[in-house]
Amino acid sequence: MICAVKDKTGLSIRRICDVLNVPRSGFYHAAKETPSQVSDGKLGDLIEDVFHTHRGRYGYRRIGHAPAALGEVCAPARVRRIMKERNLKGLRPKSFRPMTSDGRAEAPSPNLIAKDGLPEAPNRVWAGDITCIRTKHGWLYLAVVIDLYTRRLVGWSLAKNMRATLVVDALKKALDSCPKVEGRFFHSDRGSQYASNLFRSLLAAESTRQSMSARANPYDNAWTESVIGTIKRELIGDGLFESEDDANLAIFEYIDGDYNTRRMHSSLGYLSPHEFEYGTLATSHTSTRA
Image 1 (spheres, rainbow, N blue to C red):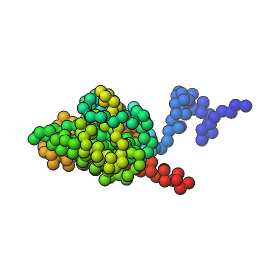
Image 2 (tube, rainbow, N blue to C red):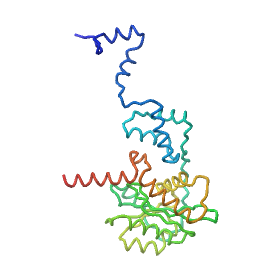
Image 3 (cartoon, helix red, strand yellow):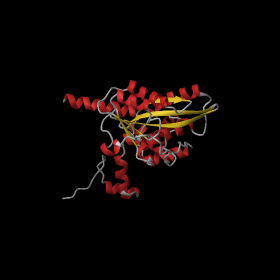
């Protein structure tokens, strides 16, 4: 037997909808709404706060995950509409264009990523690259080291030249900031800095294997290319630094104060590298105790 569905007043839902001339589907949709759904005004204020906190670096997808984390109903289309109404325009990523050159490494190392794949735990595979940074007094060169599991920038170095010491200093910072792990390897392009005796001696001393991209294939190191593109877009834009000291301070503040600790990464489920890494470690420790 089929019974008529009634609301709290005891009246038939069908009868109420007929009298009010509204579709029943609309009634049931409204009934499913929760108190967590807020007005556009309140949600807009929250969106605007997130937007300015991250200095306009977030688009609607990333911003949408911040209110969601607080329990607010926040569909991407709604976030995009509210941002448009409030004239909040996030920085738009440029199309990926690999810039890594073929390099002239002597006795290039094999591509271990192609052989072993991406890591399944932190500090197992690092990758590095170099880019140029413009100042009012000339060019500087930035070398970065990222963890390919957590996408955390574990080391970096800034200098006025592209000698091997640039990448050696970046690697030393990474080694100082992370625990030693057996079987770790370091991936890069075939640049002469990474093929230098100085850099390879440091790898050997730390029992770290070396991996290099295939010849004329910059996509083999796309992760660091992406990170460098993010730094240039979100930190520098079309501007330039006053001096080397100015660049050093700005890069430090961006990496330690935003990129590693707060910036949400879509590849990490919209967690920051710090949150993702320590969440992974906590899960690992819980599994071990169990």
